[in-house]
Image (cartoon, rainbow, N blue to C red; front, side, top):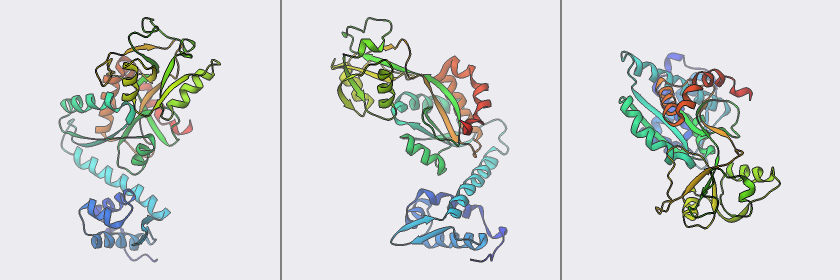
Length: 325
């Protein structure tokens, strides 16, 4: 393929269209989402390829749409150009007022404890900002960040890949969930040896399962697993019926009742186990919008309290070095 165009032949709309392609398996699906005909989208791609002088994607009706390595890099840079242009336009002439969208991802296991407060309170502070929420697994959120479908995601600061900046939101550690009549419910704190022979309702999800197993093994113990379930709400429901205890990461706005309305007692572990943070992450080669930065500030203040505010300056200073960890 030979160059036949100039930079002037490329419009922002064409970049916007191509930037969205990694999100779709077929050209027709991309066209439908972008509210454009498939032939018009195909023509826009052809113009870009002619200008760039290289093939950016492979279009086969039977096999769908596949970006070439050059196309993947082109889409990534196009997303940055489109985002920076939107930020420039949205910020022009508005002074200190924030205006426009912010797309937040949240890890599914603590979303119910975090998202409602952010959705209710942040727009009161910044009424010009429109929040969009995605709840998912680590893999789903990381994929969405890389594809440009999210500005930032809230996840546990555990086993994260390199290439992301991060901002601490709140500290978290493993806690014991008990039925009020459990013999350990009256204790101020609980130690793992006290739990080893008690029936355990295991929250069966990565990385929590491994963290709990490792914590017991480090003390020469292993839990007595009564049931394995993949939903936190079900763990708490079984605990509320007195069928065993649960071990879950501490969360803001945590309820002391199960979904059935039965009381649950929550106690800290002493010594503490699996101490970490929930963090906001975003690709290191992307600059956060002022709206996303404001949302992270708000989340750290409301969910992290004094801890989130105290570490704010340090968090920002260390975020640029995350890739080296």
